[in-house]
Length: 279
Image (cartoon, rainbow, N blue to C red):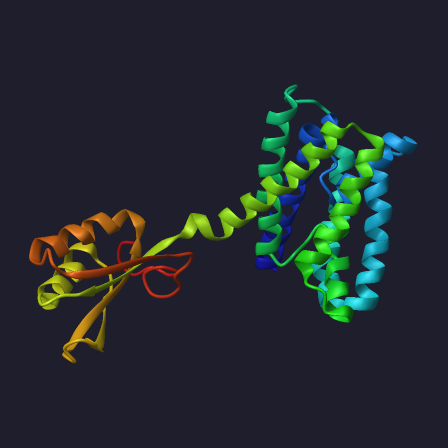
């Protein structure tokens, strides 16, 4: 029950952010950046129908389609967000917080991306255009990214006939910023360094890494292709802030050491995803 309530709170928080983005940052400047909320902005301008009503009706239909074509599990993961979204859009006031269209679009798009990531982390969505791509994937094996691009593209192109050309391009730019934000949060905020070290001084280097950097070290037996000489390679995963400290240790003992460093988006295991000393 505690975990379920925690999940609902996270979903509600994310849906609240989306509502703020739509009503205070994107909507006031007629930026219909795809999705069911973008459709709501368009139909509100075209037929004077409140966008919360549009989202409510559309999400109700989406939930029925979800249950029929995708089953109960996806339905229950969708129902909370899909139900809360029209409520929050109806509650959050339609206020123009920032008069500058570009700045308002950028802030709204970044916040929108953060909200969607929170939903994804909790295996939830806000309904709308995130569901049809899953159906197209299941029955026609169409890539979900392509399906989402097509459906959101239809919404964005529709805005061209209702709003200005500038609003159309702002909508495209908004989708791009949201995508970049989501990508960066998923990988960029948790980047680690993977370092491979081959040196005649591996024993002392390994000891200092364990004691001073407080990171685990894996010893990998390798054979040099040129001299066919057997040796050990050290493999170390560490946070970026510890990387310079590691290089200092290597240079201290062997300035000719062969070092390969790669950036990885995530590391799971002892010392990273659960506590074991300093990280």
